[in-house]
Length: 225
Ligand code: IPE
Ligand code: IPE
Ligand code: MG
Image (cartoon, rainbow, N blue to C red; front, top):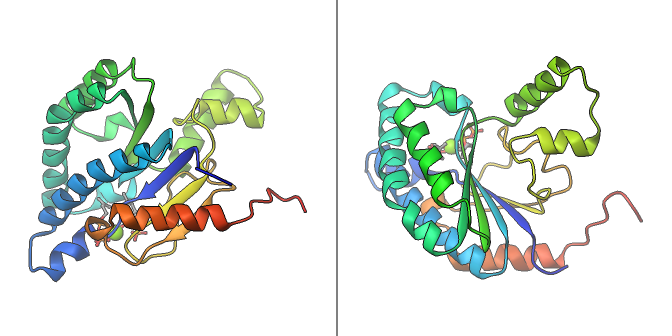
């Protein structure tokens, strides 16, 4: 079956990774962010064209303000420091999720990063922040209702925040839980699911290679025989 075109990563387990080391949760989020950047580079080097990572869900926004402040601080730092490297590598960035739910200065950094990398043609990185699959579906529905339009599968897919990206082929979740937790609900309809018991900061490039091998060994039938 070869290489998946679109890989999704639910980067879960940062908090537990930190707790096991008697570190503050934020240290886990920082380790996770660093691992994510390196992992994404590796995934692109395998020939994958689209990677979408789940960094913060709509529901995560109900976590204690101290944790959110720490996470927003990290986003500020990384969206300031990493954009040029993405551009140099030909990576086009898109951030999906509700911008109204995150601080305005971060939304501004995101817009600048998306503009800076807009010409990237080698690979596409989407980061889901303040994102929920249900919320994304509902807002696409509401836009269609307001426009007085019925939708088709294709027009609806195009109206989601992942519009223009291919459907998800491979979904990897770290951290041991075996659930989707409101990630790409529509897009993952026929994704192959691979779960890892490793906490995200411990998830190595080699672990991804093993997931790729697992993916290649599966028969995707899409309902056919
Ligand atoms: C995933 O790690 C990152 C976010 C959801 C922000 P968690 O913070 O959920 O880590 P655990 O699951 O508590 O270990
Ligand atoms: C999923 O992790 C969301 C992200 C990784 C951003 P959660 O930690 O929020 O998921 P649950 O609460 O275990 O379902
Ligand atoms: Mg978690």
